[in-house]
Length: 423
Image (cartoon, rainbow, N blue to C red; front, side):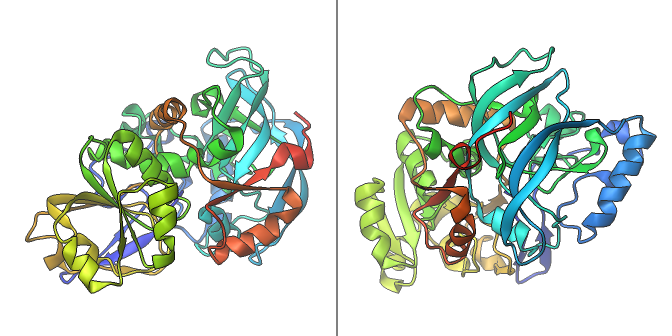
């Protein structure tokens, strides 16, 4: 889930990218590329078509050969910024020794898919097959695969490659690697600079190191969104210590990310307050999801009553909203983490964070290590997303509804039940 937004302070404007707000890591460029840094996945660049050609040229320069066409695949793709999807025949790359071929069973629909197919970030390379919440079964293995067996249930999330040589990759934060290869609409430098196509398709090929195992017993459709939404909230909770029993966590927004954050927070033994502009979500938050308190952010009295009570806040909202009042809800040295990606700049005066020494950070999904740990935790505690399962021929209607936030809480496509598989 790639997030691009700007915080405007009273001192000076700052722009932040997928490395996260206030990122504490220094990630080096891939060492094997030398000065060819232009082929990295620069997701904020508008010149994606040029980047694609540069990637292919550089791949040849460093000795990477274009792979022969692999197996036939069927997906649904957008051809232009209308974002309308229709059937699309294409070829997956040939399986290599360390690859697994996966029959796609389910794929969740994320807001990032919507932004990408409509080219709202200026990054689309059409045709685009979206989808990065992919759950499926291994059907074929390369001769060097040691981590998986045929028939195992596995997942592929937001990315399926990275440089493997930078500090981020070495520390298990491949999601912040400058050479991260997006699962959909990414540039795969190691395979001839081809543009990646996502999980709205019947089959996918991925390196074993970027595939995760799905625990037995976890409902498959409900598990698919965990590969993006789940790790997006789990990873910062672990990173910033917002997982300690008894701590008080605020969750802003009760959508695809927010409802999963509530579930993980309660499983950690935390006190959870849902913060929302919609009073109508109170019953859902308290009775169905098990939150401890519900706070209407537009109610000054409720906000004042909660002043200085929270150890941290996860802001999951993807639309513009006032954020300064949220910082007042935290205790001194409380931690705010943004995991949503509003397309309009957010405004933050310095006085909201300086007097209380409050922290601000961002998070973009999670590394493979975090994603696997998240799935194991979810399996142990029975955590899945609340989903509406659809067939592929309903996908355009689902995207229209998603744009209006008319879903509880995540659409998941029954891919195998819609397309079958050529895997």
